[in-house]
Image (tube, rainbow, N blue to C red; front, side, top):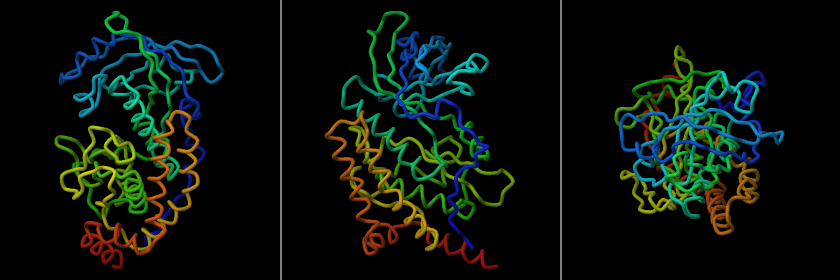
Length: 352
């Protein structure tokens, strides 16, 4: 019997203090930022040393050593201000807000304008939306970050950014392992959690992911971190990330994948995998139960401007209108799912 299990993570699996608080962290990054950005097109990119000064949750100013380098693929090539990887010293962060942290992904505006600033806030809210749906998700925290180029080649500036929990830390928090696999067999997916991922991706109108296949030269899977137990027969847990190509963010550079028959990322199109009826029904009920909390997340966001707030709330309402209608759910989700034959084979095998 396949059942949807949505229990909370055991209390013994404590998060690091950085992600215990949703308050916006204030920080200053002082480093050779221009030199770091200049390496963004190189295959081998060096870390440059700098300092990370921040105000902790008790209001005290603290300073840590940090090394930085550019990261990512598309955004590293597209962005005037490419995203950074932060590398802290494990021995130095003990007893601080950054205790337990080593490497952190920093998501920041690609360009120095308000439109790209809003993209970052919308992507952060997408991460927080999935956190509302399930504990099996990356944790994030907003940072009001001031950049100071140590070589004075760039004028100082300040942006709203966010940091993302390291995937190894997330795996430890959940009592699972990061799995490096060439691909995932459909039958070995954690289907209850896969159904939640697919409904979430449909909510934000994102098809830039795969739960079964990697991108070229990568481990599985595309914009999905796979967790589980190496020796387990099934239970491959998909954890999504990177939502800048979604309709919810609606970045100027975003476009639907070629295999999806829509031209506008704001047009929802379900391209997910088929799931057994009972699992899908329970996933729908669970996501419906989170409507008020998800709506409040966007409605109460201080950083989101009024225009994007109104558009986001309408977009969320449109999603729930589909889930509230059995006919539309069947037409716009169930009838479009892929891999029905694989699902039927799995169900037959489960009977034996």
